[in-house]
Length: 161
Image (tube, rainbow, N blue to C red; front, side, top):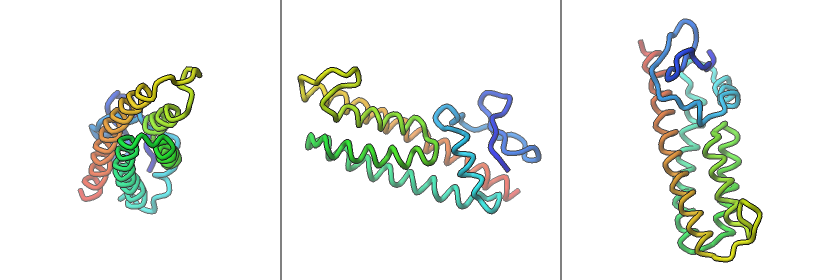
């Protein structure tokens, strides 16, 4: 069974015999080629393996977000960058594009130069940019987590039927 974009905008087809589930469209936030590879590692249609990997990632992100909040309060740019790199790697593995890109943005703000390549003149400006990006990361992570919980719940419900 593979995950394929359906012909309708907000549906996701899980296979020809299973029909479509009305789910939040998380494809804009996920590289479906990478995510499909994770799903292909499952030995059964229950998706226990991929579900465990995805849910472990979500737990990891929440723990890391707490650490990021602490590092931001301490204005510890080195720690913020390190934690961002940690999430960049794990989000890339799963194909979670928005989370990956947002963490790269946060990492960039930790460097001495801003995204445009000019030097930061004000530490508070760096803090402000990181704060906004971190809040966006939290929102995007929460939306993706909710969508994928619904996705895996729908699979469980269809397998129980």
